[in-house]
Image (cartoon, rainbow, N blue to C red; front, side, top):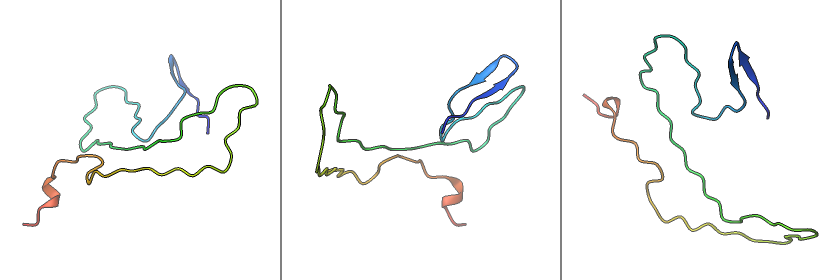
Length: 77
């Protein structure tokens, strides 16, 4: 989906999961973002090239994909 936001001289052409637009004096408490993306196919280039009947397997043996330090709320008092 294409998003275009224009505010005076600020132009935003793409918004992702961790995007933010702030103006003035700001304090962003608890502003966090983490993500992970596995890709394994690549791309097919050239004239008249095809990729048909493919099977892809992603081997991802790690247990923690994105590290998040413990937060105060994670502990019960």
